[in-house]
Image (tube, rainbow, N blue to C red):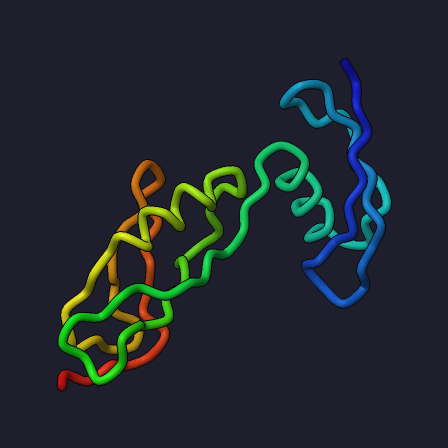
Length: 121
């Protein structure tokens, strides 16, 4: 069954209104984009939306109890809550350095990266 999905592009400040015609997982057409980036965003968002994941992970033996982390790339939007549960159970030992890989998300292998330094007590 054909379906039209509409989005506002977030890849640049233009904020183009995109219209994507899909049938199942197949993209039939994309319109409304002013650039190629908008076309690529619309295609991805219509069938496999991804989001950057930012949260915190508990630190053991550190001068701070939590370290902010981010995903190295976007993760499947429909799995974010599963990944949050996984990350909530993670623990990292201090010291932690910025850009350190904290863990990999199960099922997709995306690395979670520390956003700041945490010193040991």
